[in-house]
Amino acid sequence: MFDIPVTYSSTYKPTGSKHRARAAPDPPPLFDDTSGAYSSQPGAYPAPGADVAFSVNHLLGDPVANVAMAYGSSIASHGKDMVHKELHRFVSVNKLKYFFAVDTAYVAKKLGLLVFPYTHQNWEVQSSRDVPLPPRQDLNAPDLYIPTMAFITYVLLAGTALGIQKRFSPEVLGLCASTALAWVVMEVLALLLGVYLATVHSDLSTFHLLAYSGYKYVGMILSVLTGLLFGSDGYYVALAWTSSSLMYFIVRSLRTAALAPDNVGGPAPRQRLQLYLTLGAAAFQPLIIYWLTFHLVR
Image (cartoon, rainbow, N blue to C red; front, side):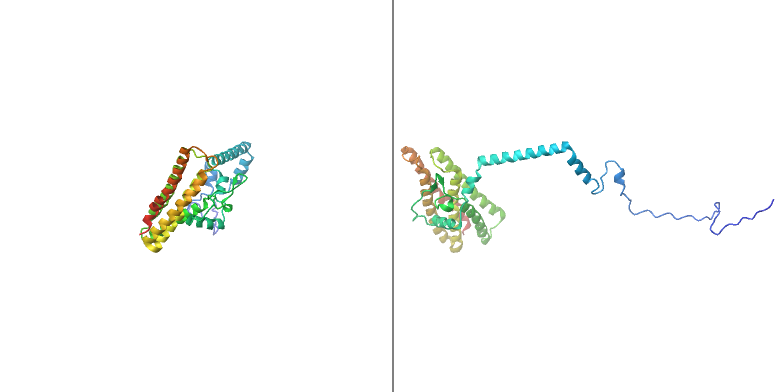
């Protein structure tokens, strides 16, 4: 047999060689690649923005969804109409706008009337075609702008007084504001009950009574401010003046409103009840003013 020599190239290694070179394995990745995991697993989250357009187009193109959306819109519109109807049933927006129809000249004159009402002659509310004139056209017409602004000013002034006395805290200021508001609400409820028991037939509404009751905040502001500037002596002088002015204002305003044409010439007992109601409402004002302001002046 002839021996045939076998030659190997420099790049070839025999497969059976014990010293064959092994390729080094790749190092394990630090983080697993999960970019394609969600798309292959059921119930997985899609990539951001992948199916949003498809879902919206599918929803808008679904007739059942369109009917449901239209039905929901009709229900919302119907509910909105019901809310507005119930709101107008208890609170008339047009009547409420009447009490805020003021201007700068009216506010200045009304504040002067509240502080010094003794020279005012005509206390009747003016009307045009059986419709009361708005406050900016009639000084005798009640408004809610001055009571609202006076209440806010009173709360701010109370906070200032408590801060000067180093007794300020949010709890004390909140108690002061809620007490002042609660007294007005109770006063209005008492007046409504008195008007009902006295069978007074007039144009006085809850807003009218709320306006007349809220005018006391003007006297409270003047009393506290005078007390802060001139001490307790100035406070009591201002309290006496503002209380007497407010009593006179309340008596003349409520008396004129209670003695409407329907009430003139009525039974004497009913007229006496109307007079007692007016005097009681006026006499109660100084007590409330003192109770809500005496602790603010030291």
